[in-house]
Amino acid sequence: MLLAPLPGEPELRVRLTWLSVFRTIATSLLLGVFALRLLASSPTRELSREDSLAFLGIGLVYVLSLIYGLWLRRGRVGRTAAVVQVVGDILIASGLVSATGGADSPFSITYSLAVIAASILLSQRGAFVTAAACSGVYGAIVAMHLMRLGAHPPTAMVVRFGFNLASNVLAQFLIAALAGFLSRQLLAAGGRLSASQAELGRLATLHEQILDSTPSGLLTCEADGRITFINRAALSILGLEAEAARSMHVQALLPGLPGLERVPRSELKVETSRGPRVLGLTLAPLEGTSRASRLIVFQDLTALRRAEDELRRADRLAALGTMAAQLAHEIRNPLAAMRGSAQLLAQDVQGDPGVSRLTTILLRESDRLSRLVEEFLRFARPPKPVLRPVGLELLVKETMEMVQTDPLSQGIELELDLQPVTATVDPDQVRQVLLNLVRNAFEAAGAGGRVRVALSSEGQMARLTVWDSAGAIPESHLGRIFEPFFTTRSGGTGLGLATAYSIVRAHEGRMQVSSTPKAGTEFTLELPLAAEEVQGASTSSG
Image (cartoon, rainbow, N blue to C red; front, side):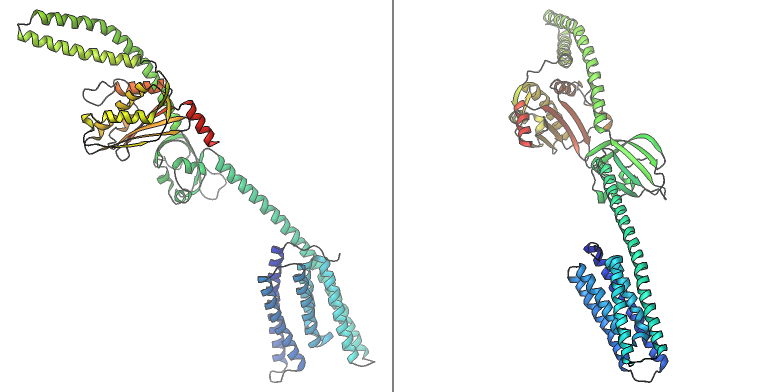
């Protein structure tokens, strides 16, 4: 096989396009040189037949270049297109040489252009084949020129024509060798460049996949705070879209950031579309960058901090529960004796109004202390829940019907968003928790306010939320709201939410609260689903 395999169609199309551009430029230069030669020799003389043929040949080159361009634009590109262009270049060069003096033609250099084109399109072997074809055609043109001079042309002319032929043939093969070598080197360099680009592309893809799969948020920014990169985990943590994040300033994205100097480790609380988040972040300069770029690495510590708070709260509740149980036990017996004595005293002094009034006060306050002691005992030793599968939707509806008779519910808009959910709970204890939360919500919302109770399932837990529109719990109180004896309400004991929290914990559930004046207050209860409900959810998801 004389011709080496051609490159792929996209690369060959690029080469043919550049070759057509080069041919057009070279032809335009030749046209200019030929016109200058004619003007320099005799500006007023008419064009000879040879001159007209030369101009015709140059015009033919432009026409063929246009045809090649249309072919490249609309047709498939392969070996045929490359061979047609090279053969066309040889024919055009031969026509120009034959029409402009044969062996003495100044356009014999156009054969070199055909050889260079062949080395680009058909590799080095194709260049040598083209050089041989150009030499053969040029030799035939020289021989025909000599034959037109007669049987015995002048020796000097024969020598000159022979020298021109030999020098042109030698030039064609030298150009074929050099151009072929350069083309081969260019092809090898292009292959290495393509391999390097492919490897860089794979590395870039791998780098992007690693950054996107990293659970930590990664963010880079310039010294002026302009964000240059943010990964998928960071967008998820902050609840943002990529385009919106890249157009923001880092201080707007992470308000409260302590500046762009090196920060070994710190925590930052930020507000996001998904609610408040506690971030643990590290900030360091990026080494090797031309500008003062910074790398910020952060993790979402919200769930961890919440779990720590719940553990601390559970420890405090256990300690306070033990103390409350002991205190209630110590108070209960003396209180019973005091109340009995007050009853006897009231019987003996029935005729004295002043003493009767005092004994009435004593009995009333004794009863109040007795109820408080009972609440202490329920908090300290809550009854063990009697668990069974319960349809929470029906339980919530019944509880809401009962609570709507409460005077606190007057003038309040109550919304229900309940899905059928079955959970393994003690219905009486869950009703007690729900009553406590809803009554608190009514009292906080007030007349004209709104309260919403929602029920759904998430994973293996039932999710019950009680929301009110007031959002009146200060942030400083949120961490203590489930502590016993903590209350901001006049006359409250501070045991209602603490007892509710203990009941939810006894069900192996979770209870959380969030409150802002803008978003309102929301208590969230998570209780274990019934086994059959969990199995049904797993089957449907599978």
